[in-house]
Image 1 (cartoon, rainbow, N blue to C red):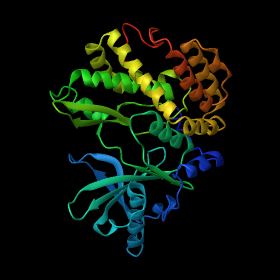
Image 2 (cartoon, one colour):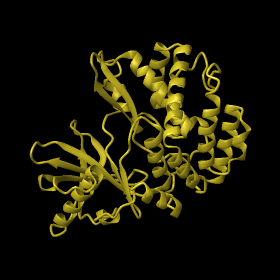
Image 3 (cartoon, one colour):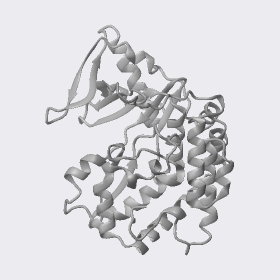
Image 4 (cartoon, rainbow, N blue to C red):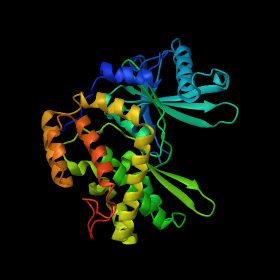
Length: 357
């Protein structure tokens, strides 16, 4: 049988650690990722239809449970309210789940408010440099803020709420509440964001649809929820969601309802927004990319193959001088700013037959 390649965990280097500390991301935690591995029982977690979710609900020794649950509540307070402990008394840990197949093998913690039964989730994972860069780039360059904390080899992330993309395709794609043009517009913009900052593997199960009731219709936003494949793969198409077979129904939906000129307009809108964000957080982005450019986040062959594809794609020889994935992200963002001076020029991956770009 062929060997299945799994992206390795890249440890957090001193430069990134210093950046995280400066941005108040690196904080002391009362419990680490490795502490959660001392569970004594586990059982499969089933969904409402009785199907296996591939998560395991885990339990701990009775004498350890109070300490673990208290620590998890304190972490939640750090993530959500900067450590304010006023709400801890009416919060309780309802469940801890473990996913062995995920790249960072996450624990998912379900927190419940005892006053109103409102529930929330957060995740505790192994800290992975490429994932952290993905989270921070999403925070800086997308419309969405990402709340996460690090402590040594531990990464804590908030839950990204929304309908998983694969479930949306099955149950919501043709729902009359979904405004056709709004969805098609968001698909174009999401595809553009991923490609410009080289966020890979955005197949339907790795992003969610955030649906918000508006004045008259439902507003839709697509949010990435998996950042393990930030700037790692060697193939250009890996960074374009349009090419994943799981996204095919969305691609067909988009091409059916958008013409080329409208798709290009939405591309330019997203490009302009990214440039505006780049300008507003220039120093923080520069520091992040300076550190990213010095790190080995992918095998050398991946960098060389991707830089050749991007140089050909953009007809820009600057990519050929890049020696790291961080360099490629930097040049991609800089070339975006250069191209934006000529809005009449079509984007390199826009064609009459391929509007989901």
